Amino acid sequence: AAKKLFLLPGDGIGPEAMGEVKKIIAAMNEKWNSDFATDEGLVGGSAYDAHGQAVSEADMQKALAADAVLFGAVGGPKWDGVPYEVRPEAGLLRLRKDLELFANLRPAICYPALAASSSLKPEVVEGLDILIVRELTGGVYFGEPKQIIDLGNGQKRAIDTQVYDTFEIERISGVAFELARTRANKVCSMEKNNVMKSGVLWKEVVAQTHKAKYSDVELTHMLADAGGMQLVRWPKQFDVIVTDNLFGDMLSDVAAMLTGSLGMLPSASLAAPDAKTGKRRALYEPVHGSAPDIAGKGIANPIAMIASFAMCLRYSFNMVAEADRLEKAIADTLEAGLRTRDIMSPGMTEVGTTAMGEAIRER
Ligand code: NAI
Ligand code: MG
Image 1 (cartoon, helix red, strand yellow):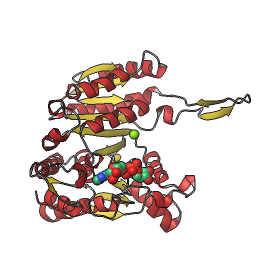
Image 2: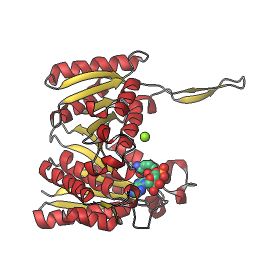
Image 3: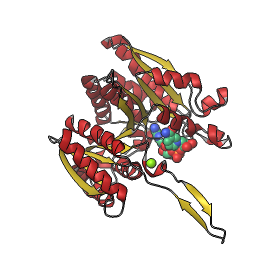
Image 4: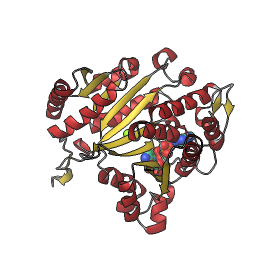
């Protein structure tokens, strides 16, 4: 049976970056007999322009039926004034919610060719390869009550509520332990059990899950604020970091900047495996947005989108050799001195989106 990919290029540089992935998919089908079947839909502002919604019901059904969704980026100044419920971001939020994507995987890897141009010392980042596993559907971003109350004396009170249930912590730590087994076999769990009840339960459930099913993996615990400091001081001490929605949001952005440009960073979001088939719903997307400042100029870096497709090969289709080969093609292309403008440095060769995509595809 064909591997069903549903492509949602979105807005701005989304379609430009996705275009390079489409060419890679076509080349894999042609040269390696990979059996990818692709279908394409609209999301974000382009979906709003076409049918007044950030993602149509028909495209939602296709996303639900696909083996994996590849997502570009959404948004842009053109849609600043559209109603809140149909703003471009609503399309991505709807996908995350309906596909039940509770695990967000954000790798921070430093390509050797880029270590010298990092804002940190080269020895701190060279060879860096860490994976942050962030809980994506619970915690303080979704917990109730969530409101602003007028206290009537000129004062207001804002309330957000951090809520985690045992099963949510179990399933996210399970993902982290399983991924660690395919890597350096180490997990560091980050919370704040010194000041938060959710931190107490988090640490307890991670430890129990470890003991019950994953005792072969090395597990450590760290307070999330100390974790932030350690990420910047000596990131190579980590392999997999598992943390909640809020801390994960911040820690993954910190880790991202260890490695350079937004244009380089992929991500994956996974659902629980289906009880019968073992298949997981999944969505793969670059960390960057639609970059309206450079959209349509042919200069966007397609590497984040291409590396997101490599994650798709690895996690949705278990095509480990192909994923490794695609990631090596990216590293080799950088090694050869090719750079898009966002990662350009003296002595290197500046190329546009399609030339970068082609160089990677050839390799
Ligand atoms: P952005 O990530 O789109 O751009 C930030 C800066 O990084 C810009 O200067 C941009 O040119 C540069 N950049 C980003 N990706 C690049 C690439 N692949 N190659 C070269 N340069 C790149 O974030 P910004 O400017 O805050 O947001 C722009 C729009 O994107 C907004 O409408 C925002 O809501 C949306 N957005 C969408 C996201 C998504 O679809 N997941 C995530 C973040 C923002
Ligand atoms: Mg963030």
